[in-house]
Length: 360
Image (cartoon, rainbow, N blue to C red; front, side):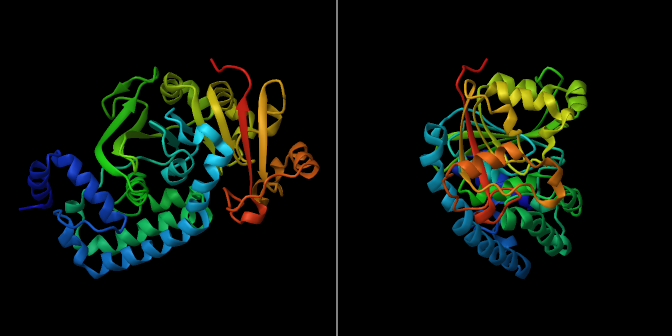
C-alpha cells in the first residue's frame, strides 16, 4: 500500500479529504514537525529527516526570538486595526514569503503574493526516492536560509535552489512557512489567471499560481494565493490578470520588503500606481514605493520607525535624500528587529503610510 492510499484511508477516518490529509502531512514533514498518526510518520524515522528537523528547530527558535515574536508585539501598537483586519493583503515582489506576511497581518482573509519564482508541482512525498531525500531536504533548507537569517530571499539564489531537486518551485517553501506558523492546510489547488483576472484551468492562463486554503491559529479559514507573474509595465501590458484579481479584493493591506527598488524605476509605474490607489495601509522599507509619492500631507499620513541609513551598496543609486532629512529632523521610534535588506535592527527602517482620501 503506497503513501497516497494510506493517507486517503486516514482522511476518510477523520472526515477530511485524502488530498487535504496529504497536503497537511507533507507540509509538516517538510517543516520538520511531528506527523504522528499519519501515513507520513514512517518517513520521519530516517537520520536525514531527524537532521532536517533539528536544524529547522534551531533556525526557527532564532528567527522567533529575533524577528517574529518582536513583530507580533510591534504590529498592534503601530499598525493599529490593520494588524487584526480581515481585509485582503497585497505583497508584491514577495516570492514565497508567507512568513512575514502572516507575522504583520495574521488575520487577513486572503493573502495575495506574487513573484517571478515558479510555483512548481504540489509536493508528493511518495514520489520522492529515498536516495534523494537527504539532498532534497538539504536544498530546501538552503532555499530558506537567507529568509531566516536576513529576512529576505535572494532572487538569483532562488532560481537555482527552487529547481535543484524534486521539491521544486515555491510550494515546498510555502508549505514550510504555513506549518511553522501553526497553520493547518485544508486544500491545495494549482490555478491560473487569464488577462481579465478570471480563474482558468492550469496551463490555460498567462499567470500560473496556487491556491491554498488553510486554518490559521485563530481557527478561521483563510486563503493564500501565490502567482508567478511579471509585474513590470511591459509584463502587465501582456498579462494584467494578477492586478485584476487584486483589484476585486481592494482596498488591501500592503507589505513591501526587499523589493529590489523596482518601483523606483519608471518601468514599474503601473504596479506602483495600483498600490497607491488601492491600499488602505502601506507598510514598507525604503526599497518599496519612493517616499516622494507619499510626501503630500493632504494625501497621506506617514509614520517612520527605525533609522534610515540609505540603501545597501547594491542599490546605492536609489538613495532618498528627502527621506534622510525626515529621519534626521525627527525622532523616529526605534525598531527592535531587522527588516528587508537592513537585517540589523540598528540600521533598519519602516514607513507606515495611510491614505487620507478614500481609495477607489
